[in-house]
Length: 92
Image 1: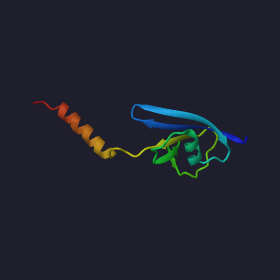
Image 2 (image 1 turned 30 degrees about the horizontal axis):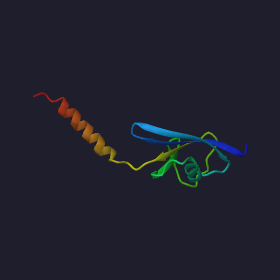
Image 3 (image 1 turned 90 degrees about the vertical axis):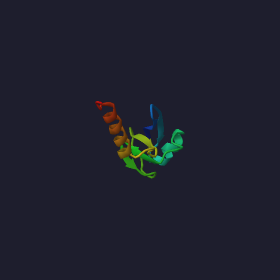
Image 4 (image 1 turned 180 degrees about the vertical axis):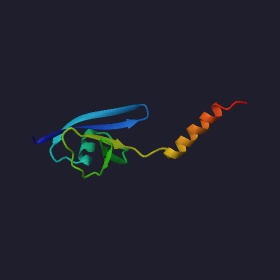
């Protein structure tokens, strides 16, 4: 087989977009991102949740996930949710 089929995924809160591509064998993650037309704001990439660099060669059936920068530190987000729950459940 001289081609690989990969899926490129980009997600935002509440929505996502996927593009299925057939590319030449030996295609890198960066080349697949460019071919998909997605990921203009991507800060990283992963294949099935495992981070990869731009030069990683993709295999047939891979799902390339385009990652964005976090908008809030996960610890801060968790703390805010906990605080909101405790205020909601206080008995006066």
